[in-house]
Structures are given as structure tokens and as C-alpha cells.
Image (cartoon, rainbow, N blue to C red; front, side, top):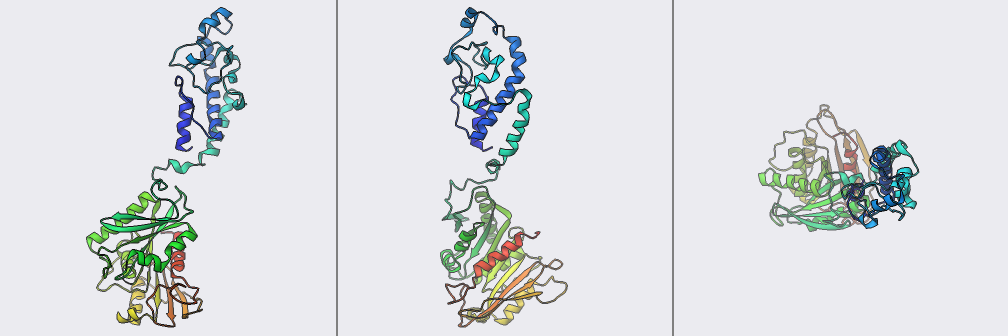
Length: 410
């Protein structure tokens, strides 16, 4: 039952003098009626033993009746004026003597249970089984009330360790329904707002409704790079993850990261150094971080790489490309190339595009590479907004990659 319904049940079953009954859902009212009826049947014998007025004279009945306002029973008991009472003790609710013969008389006619005695208990069990899951999410101690903090379909600003973190909650998200989270990291001299517009990840989140899009700022506004292994940077990403799991019902094994340019290099760093925080990562127009030593097994990773990117060319171009995917596959015992090569759409400003996939082997996790080439040099995020005429969208492909990870053992 929902917490509000449980409160209503409790207030109706615990006798309170002159208490006002709380509104209840129909199935909860049925549950209350069944419990009351069972209590009446179980207590009938003891009540009959205490009562000596069932067959008493009219004068005895008149002296025993305290009247409806003096009744110690809950206010939702409908009591005929002709009924006499067997007790006037305020702390005890005893049904009218007429109800000792016909126990259901004390309930409103529209809600009289139709079961007798112990036959009520099977229906009680059925009521709990049938209705218990109706709003069980309300009873989960970790279920957030983000409807009180953020309306679905909106973007909200949080401050974590002194840095802005923007969170977009899809309009169709439901409180208590587990969600994934995708952190989108901006590049050098960019901002969270800049990557919100460039990636259009919010639109993907809105269309899918199963994840929230998260946009943190660098420690230095419009800075050149993320902090990589700095203690403060590691703490920041852990704290952001804790915020998401605490306030947005995000599973701890459902946090992902994707970044553009230097943000992509940071995402590649995170999959190796914070595998307990991130389930998988992706990089868009980014390569292996410079002077970084990787010792862990890492997490599933996708690269989106434009072979006509003038910025990547400055950092090694094809050599950087080969070094990056080779590092990601360093634990592959076979040393083999991709097992799958899928041709992608080449419409508009895309000369060629293919999806390369290396499966998980040994301790090496899954690796995918979207290898493409634009007709004109560009460092832009791959999507129809930046590449005229293309149907390819890096945000959609990255989220599909993350979804595939979710359905495989971690």
C-alpha cells in the first residue's frame, strides 16, 4: 500500500474517540472492512461473555446506551438509534449488542463485507497480494521524491563541490522508476551550456525517457582540460554520482559518461580509473589522454572518430587513433581486429562511416568505434545540426551502446 493509504488504514483500525475517518482508495476500504469483520468474528465470544445485556430489558438497555456522541468507536461506524451499547469505556470500542448477533450491522450498508468469520482471511491475503504492488515504490527507502525537487521535462542546476552541474529529467520519467544517467563532458574553452546545445543529448533523453542527461562544468570555467587524476577531480565525479543516486533514483551501476574533445579524453580516463563509478563511457572526437598510465581493465568504451578532424590532426591524427583503440584493447588475448564491421549511412556531408566492434575477451571489455570522415574538416559533434544532410547522430549511437551494456552482465 501507499504510505498515505497505510495511514488511513491505521487511523481506521485503531479506535479513537470522535476520530474523523481519512479518505481511502476503494481497495483499501475493502481491506479495512475485511480486517474489521475478522476482528468482530474473533472477538464475538469474548464480547458475549462480557456482555449481559443482549437479552436484557428495555430499561437496562436504556441505561447502557451513552448515545451516538459518546460512542468510543471510530466515526465511520454507522449506528442505528435503536442499538444499545455494552460498554461506555472510552478506551475500548465494543460493537452494539445488536451487532453481536448480526456483526455487519455496524458497517455502512454500502460497504458491508459479504464473508463470514474466518472466511475473511483468504480474501485478506488476496487483497494484499493484488494491491500490494500497486504503489510499492512508495515504500522503497531509497525512492526519491524528485517531484518535490524538479518537475519532469525540466533542467535543474545543482552545485557540487562549488561547480555547476545541470540535470535534465525527461518529461515521461516516473518517481520510483529506476533511471540511468549519462554525464556529458564539454571540451576545452567550452561550457556545460555549450555541450547541451552541441550534443542535443537532452532530446535523446526525452525521446527515450529511461535516462537523465547530466552536464557538469570544469573546475575552471571555460578551462583547457579536466583534472584527470587530481584528488579533487576524482572526488567531484564521485560526489556527482552520489547526487544522482540519492535524488534521481539512478542505480549505482547505471552511470555512464561521454565527452567531446578534451571531455572525451576525460571520459576515456574515467573508464579506467573509476570503474566502480562508471558502467561504460564514450568519446567523441577525442583520443588517449597524454602522459596517462592505465593499469586497470577498464569499462566498455565507444569512440566516435572523424578522420578529417583538424584538431585531432594536431595531436597525432591517425597515430593517435591507432594508439587509442590499441590501448583500449590492451587486454585482448587474441590481439585480433574487430569481429564486426557495419557500414553506416553516408548521406550529406559524410564521405564514409562504419561501426567497428570488438567483443569482450578475457579481461578486456567491449569496444566499439564509429569511424567516419566528413567531406569538410570539422571537429564538431556528429549530428544533423553540425553535418549537413547526415542522418547519423553520435548521441543516439552512444546511448544505444550504453543500453546494450545494461542488458549484459557487468
